[in-house]
Image (cartoon, rainbow, N blue to C red; front, side, top):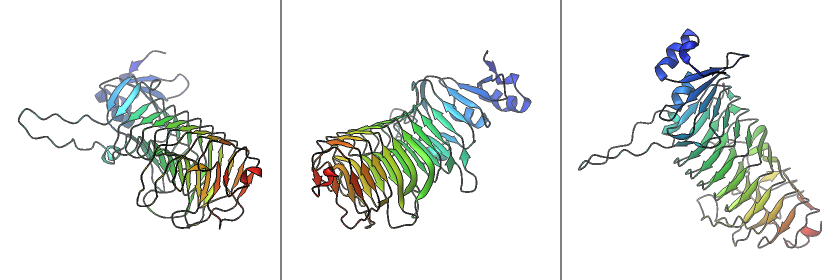
Length: 371
């Protein structure tokens, strides 16, 4: 299949893409196309020219822009992570001149300080978007941000050194975040939430899956905030202040029905200072606050050590507003070297929480390892 310019496509596409200087590879079996972006060209221009089912292929290089996606069924794909999306370089003032103000934000994604955004609305979600094989680095807010989406796929993306979250979603369902690397982000490497702008009950994510990711050097590895029906499986989380943090509150429906399984959660001993809503965090493997019917099973949790309220292997605590943990199950985990304890139930008022068949050496209160 040979690459040809968009002038060989339909008239409407010709009028759009001919100005953009893009290339396209139509597929043999359908009208779906690959729009190819070369270094020096605009990814956003290709995204704007694309239609449902098209793939925007971004060749290796550094592209200094933000990308805002609202087209359902679109694929944005780099080449083996060698495609880098980064903030625009600051303008250099002429000799003797005062520094110029930064350029006007090209789109809402850039204006918010994000790298790649997939954004729908309450009445019209953006469905079936795929973001694969990119590096998104150095943005003041989030590397990849999504809101009001369904079936989003983020795979083999490296999100590093972003100011808040590496890869994040709110108000969204049935996403898959797989084989990504999130490192050095200011808050969570991977963040799944009901809403970041208003209070409310937990969102049913419809079975969102966070799997086989490598998450290190962030404040928190994976945060699940006020959500339900989520799987966190097979990830490696190390060098964060906390590996996995489940956040609930008094709202209904409550956070929970989350499965945290098969993860390697090792040496999350970075120290993060207190915030207005949370005390300092260090040495935390898995923390449940205000969660119900969450299952923590078959994880390897080792050498997470600290002296904060959240420190230890698996820790249950009341939420910031005093919501209790209820009916959670911690079973079949392999825990060692966590301090002050491998298992810690600091939520004595919570009910129905069980610790069964865990291999561990220390617990608070004593006896949890013997279950």
